[in-house]
Length: 128
Image (cartoon, rainbow, N blue to C red; front, side, top):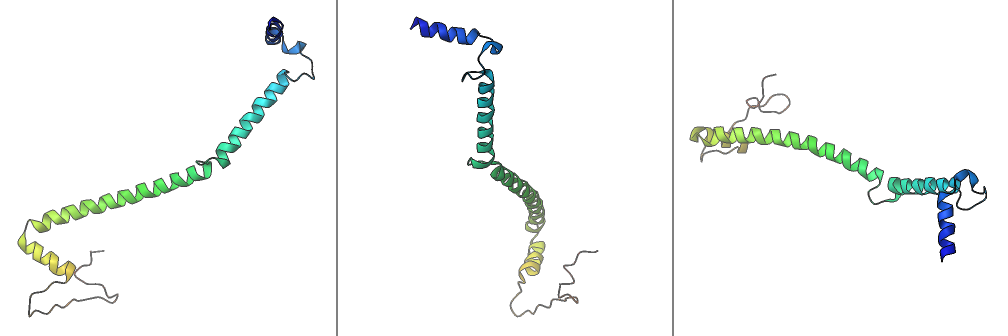
């Protein structure tokens, strides 16, 4: 037991230059082992893991697209809230809004929609 311990201590305190070149525990062998282990780990993380780089990159691209879509939808929500506040505060505006958006009409009433060459309602156009 003491002999194994002393040989281990001797190994720990022996400079690399005094170690035999063909020894299994040489400094060069340990360096190669750590490099090989690091490369194996790196390949695992890049290609073989469940969260490999391809998946991470595609998830980030999806996240950017969804954030862009979120911005567009938040803008639409603001427009709808503004329109709702304008329409539901005034009964005449509510009737106008229902007639324009849902083509509602009173009994015995006919509705005419004037369209342009592209079959778009003229009144609904915004000025260009």
